[in-house]
Image (tube, rainbow, N blue to C red; front, side, top):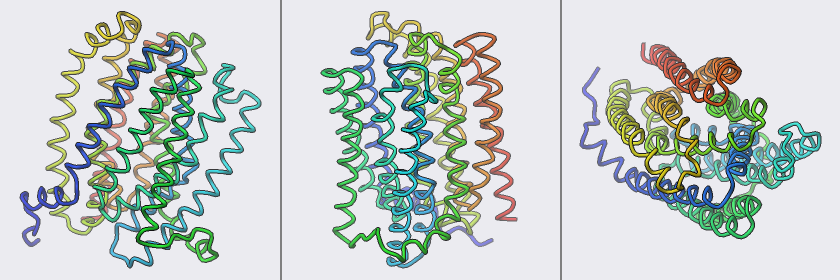
Length: 426
């Protein structure tokens, strides 16, 4: 094979020009402010309400994937390829139309099922589900737009939209939670997504006229569904395997106070997802465009994997030492019982982050169904391990199981990445 036209200097230069460091700095700012706001909210609310928020947010994460039906992935994959502006416009409009149909339909189904107490036996959770899960509609639209801007590699715009969305949400959550408690939390959450959705429509309208309700958009279903179908399974299994502990805890553990402590410890693990998430967001369209260039593909993967390992390991070490002290100092013992869960959750989540780029690489190679297999096998393993651990050791068992689940996820990811790579390049 001929020498690669992409050298290390050019890669950094291209990523800088495309806004990688802009996006990373924006995400760092967001997570710092968001984390501070979560600590503030935790200081206002009782541990019981923190547990309720975590349960509802977990349902929101899972149902948002079903509501979006993977059409954001179709936009990211298809619009990353070399196609005309008109083709990309058609793909976006078709995806938005199908997202509207799927998200609204699912929302009303959930509201109906909630009447029978399907999702929780806690009365306050049942009361909050209609407002707590409404963002899955606006969020599904928002993610399609973000995928489109990501596909055309407008990372600076993505960072601006993401920062604006998070800052509005954070400011609103702090103010309304202070005034109205847990209900105010969800009022602010809804308003922030609706405002940013309006902004996305306005931004797109500046360059092109968006027409969702056109007959021709229905004809685009086979094209977008080709990638949406495996993607929805991959994302659904991935989200469920990541947060299946909260769903199982909601059924097995009735002490909402202890659930709140566990949820608080789980919330802190967001610090381990910051850099890996940014790298994956930036790298996905590049992996797609280099899927036929083995040397360039491998160069980018190796380079950012080394950086990823360094950051994840350093973050884990610093957090294991510093987080327990900070919890004690900031909350004066209010969340002291969360400390017993944190080390195990931190290690489990760190193991998952070590293979984030492998998932992006598998996506770029067009083997999206392998990501679904990884998540499915991890989900099955997690359900078994967490259930047994909960029955044997209670909530501590769920924390112990997170390490085993992290190992299972890493091993599955390594196996299927190697399989995808061999199929494409050999």
